[in-house]
Length: 238
Image (cartoon, rainbow, N blue to C red; front, side):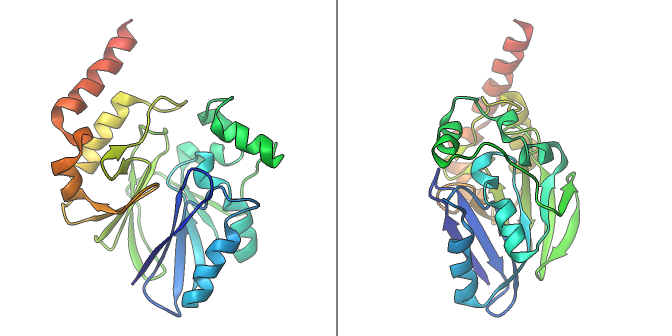
């Protein structure tokens, strides 16, 4: 099995390439910000193993995970899968980003002012199970970082976690469509319920496991999660 990350230049986003082996079909996850796109770097990995891409999975609609979706789909003619609540971010990424933030500054440097969807977009809701490149995929809607964040299990062996879960960390919840209380519910109901043996492929940083994070991450302890919920509830009452 091939599981390899091509790391984008901006924000060090992991673009995962997964294939059952050499000379096979594959899919990629979250092609991020590299100028002019990450297609060339991903192409090197595809040629290295003689892989044929058949799809792009997107964990959420933040620009550092979607910037190269359109050029990749144009190069290889593959569909793009994204949770329905984040689909609009493909063409309007700043609906879920700070207008004057780091992504806006990078786009200004690139001279990029408009965005668009790829030709073939396939919406996911959560709970779907399907086969892709020889793998059994299950979709988990995991809001909190964004309203349409999703995670994917692969053969009950890997969890593609996007920006929901990192090694020793979780995704921020202070950007538009993010929610700390919703993230707390996601972590309680959709992360901590997963098998400890799942290998976690995060959107940024190193690979980990559910078991390691359950024991060592301060963000997955019940006292922290309860505090996250109370903080949001207090803001709502105020």
